[in-house]
Amino acid sequence: MKIISPKRVLDDDYNQIIMAKIYDGTLLLIEILFLILKVFYFFCESIFTMFIPITKKSVAGEIILVTGAGHGIGKELAIGYASLGATVICWDINEEINKQTMNEIKMMGKNAVYAYQCNVADRKEVFKIAEKVKKEVGDVTILINNAGIGFPRTLLNKSADEITRVIDVNLKSHYWTLQAFLPSMIKKNHGHIVAVSSLLAFKGFMYGTVYCPTKSAVKALMEAISDELRTYSKGKSLIKFTTVFPALVLTGIVKNPRMRFASIMKGLTPQEAASLIIDAQRQNFRERSIPSHWLPISRLSRLLPNKALNCIYDFVDFSVDVAD
Image (cartoon, rainbow, N blue to C red; front, side):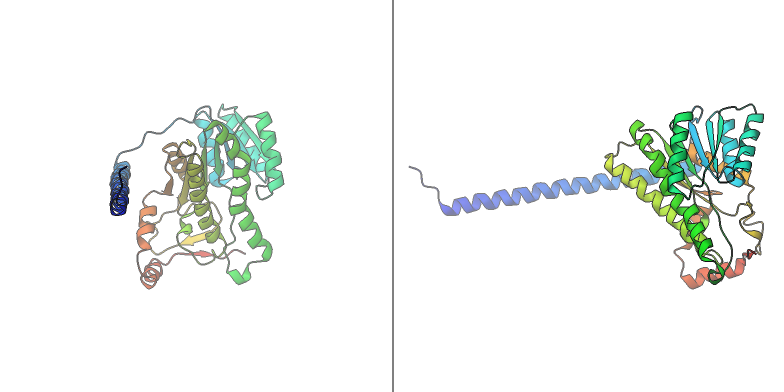
């Protein structure tokens, strides 16, 4: 009978532990190197797309729902998508101007357009009208959460109703429409969600004590839902998410905008803004400022000390009239 020395057993166990640690360490090193390569690749890809235009995907045949389609950016988005051959569904709380948008599109010879009165701040109403849309038109494949309101005045002069309305329309409505339309997109593994935020999501501005936080929250919501879907699908989801950050768009929310160097930040018309938003969606940008140069400038500015940033804002001297 062969007797195995206890010391030899201990040595074998020790060697196995060492080999296991070496193996685990090697795997970790390979993972880290692979991660560095992927990060470098996507960094280069990002730089590449800054200079080389991305091919715009077709939206012909897609069923696109635009909230706040009765006026401003929403109206121009509806018209723009209809002209590209999409079926367009217009949602707005104001039935009259919403139907006007639909009629203007039909006058263009585009009959695949529908108008529904809907208060996007009301969850029950959103689900009710969403079910009606599904039965009468079909499953929405591109959702444009555009509806937004604001009351430019100091916080202490904002009523409780104004604060609640801005939060409900600018933020809560995104939750209701996502819950209503995302399930069918997940089922088909096809769809695109677009959220219209604001450049003010990156910097609070006077008179924007409610508006700015809602736009920041929209940015965070889009990041979270995108990551949630990516994680649960194990990277297999084909649903796209795009958050756009318009700078100054002359929609009427702010009255008489003024700044020291007006040519630096010239206000865009709703039609110009809508065209750039459609391009961002068709090019699958995850985030895009309108115009595009403001997003990198905004991010870089956050590296400055607060006092330095305040000096720049004071120098530019941007201001608007307070709401009546």
